[in-house]
Image (tube, rainbow, N blue to C red; front, side):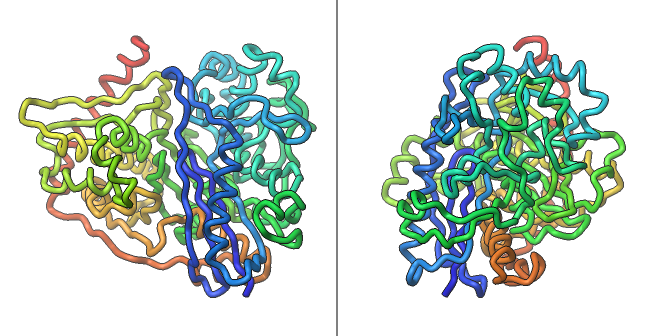
Length: 501
């Protein structure tokens, strides 16, 4: 039997999934890694950790297959994380993670020159430190030795694809937020390359998302225990391929992912729906389609911070197979909606959507002697839900109407969080049998590329299964007032952060 192997490298963990041609998930393996944050605006990781974690998770899932016969491998990843390598793909410095804000000054200078045209060329509404172009310019000015030695500037997907095949390859789905990719011509934006001082030859070759561009090389095949006949495709950015895995493939479909970050995905046939030019547009992992895709840097990552910082007892229990997140969430179950007035702003690494502010900070406001740890946990879950609603309100101004949301990512595993989102947004929240949607989307693209599935639509029919529909409750009325307080606090502190930090 020919299996489909999916690999997705997220911000704080990497996952591998194995699927059979009938759409059955054979197994999923996951490994977390801790981002290095030496100061408030820095976030880095040794790129070798991506490859080591990839190898480990792939070997775990391959041990569950019969004969390890793999038809195709698809790889997706977080966007914007920059990896500098030599001509052989060896890293020259730690990866600069997408949430890293060191390049704020470079972003400001680029914004002064390119703001009028950048949205039309890239779909990016605001030039901020997140984008790789700004990071590269920072390297040029602050680490010239690394900049001058860099043969290839890669994203995480590109780095893993090279390790697997020996080919430097990318696609528009993951490169569209680099600030130097023109998604209208599906190629590099030469003017921006010249501006930041790099050449086309320093970037990977652009292939179509889901296109077979090579096979496993001998080194990767030997390491993974596979053969060099296995085809490899790039799935694209995790949010785009995850939309496919959620069944979000038709115009006007809505989904959200609460992983390390919070993102919303709306499938579009044309990229110019937002006349205000305020909402990020991605190139979809479906050829010819696009995504409205607001991004909020810290959602599940905020919960992970809380767990690591205040959940020592619960973290210790993880060693015996207990889910620390589930234990912590249980403290919040009996806390009333609105957390008795405690409001949390989940801006632990600045904000992007719907209002960019790299100086924004997280905040718990309104706590008293009566508030417990459970209140703080529920306020965190509610804060992310308020941020979701904030973005949905902006999207609806384009004329799109939210009638339901498909919820994916690690946050979708929480029944309480799903109910809070349904109540805050006042729409049904749909959950899926398998919420590892980036892996599902990768498997679908691998299946189409290898002929297992006739189309993306048939792949979705085989692999995307609805689990539950969570309807709003009477708590909707409570959350209307709480959301007003959240919005007022967010408005008030936005200027404070800009002046203070």
